Image (tube, rainbow, N blue to C red; front, side, top):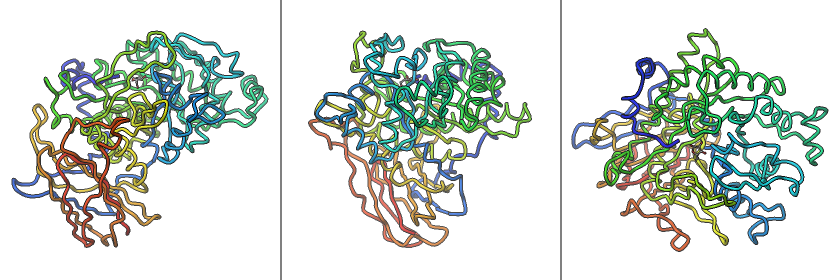
Length: 540
Ligand code: AHR
């Protein structure tokens, strides 16, 4: 769901919802403390290995592939293409995602899943029906389904996060899919899988119980209490099939929803004890609706702070229900759809197979904000265990395919750096930064930072966003314990034109460059260019 202005939400929120939102403080830890510096003073980061937020679950760098537009057909699967293997998997896409080491991928939707009959997508291909997908008004050929996805995941080296149909689908068929995937043999659905030639179970651990069920656009949308009861029933049946599952209930689809937080409270009151995590989604925009007539980049670049606020608010509701139920279990969050998305909207695929839908072209400012989101997700590591950049290929994605190749969009780079460098535990930095004013929001720091420490690997990484559109900032890094021995790498994404994009004709218009590395010592200084996102890795 696209985000509506937070101000709209606040106007609409009921008193009870507002009270819950106001109770946000005890929900989780505060984000990394940033102190405004006096005018003229520079930016500084204190790195203290004793100040830990939490171990980083790398699933927070997960992604998402939906049966939507060219994500599956023409993205990961294109039989007959010279770029595909004998199974029909696009080799270039597979190799790229494998190399990126994307840890978890959510599938098959999204809105699509709420009308999807998984039985249509398994078994002999020639017998699978072509169906009308009523979420995006396209033709779904069902040539790629659960088993193909599992095989693809194995080849890529990623973990599937499976979505379930709680719209038109029943709790019984949700449990049947778990049985199809996870039961070794000897039951109706496991034997069906074996009859399809797949002897070993897929052993899928993470399951999303429905998608955006709070949204009137969702197939099978229903009131919160009803969904809570249905999710509870599904979870109970699924756990009977496989008690090792990790189950994610479907939370609010955006802070812009009139039912934001109320939905989460009501559904959890029904199913809290049966689930492990709660989902949240948000997409961000820089256009008239959100940031003013022609957009407002300075404001736009502060939206990752709103992501963090959303995380604290939703965690607050989880903890409120937990306390009311006197439960010992603490839910974690799955931010399983997030991205910039506002230009390519709409879902009318004109009843074709794999039409071009939601093929957003990302520019430099989008990439900078994506870097900010990754910082926020790392800083929320104590509460967020899964998060999915929505999506991965062709549809609002960092990767775009053509018949002849693969393009890395601007947003690919901050995502890649997190995947490559962020490991171990997330540290709670103390950050001092000059600020700028954002209407309705107050002072926003120019510098946004996150840090991971990998004791085993002997490295530490810093991820830095400079929101200043005009000026470079000198940043002092103060190491509270033994300073790193050397700088392993220092990369930055920046440029003069915030609207610059990569295309097949000019694929590296927005590409990383080396950042002058700081000189080793207990205090280091780096110059962060204006409009930039940087990743530095140090050897301890
Ligand atoms: O990611 C695109 C769509 O956005 C998903 O299908 C839906 O869950 C969300 O509204």
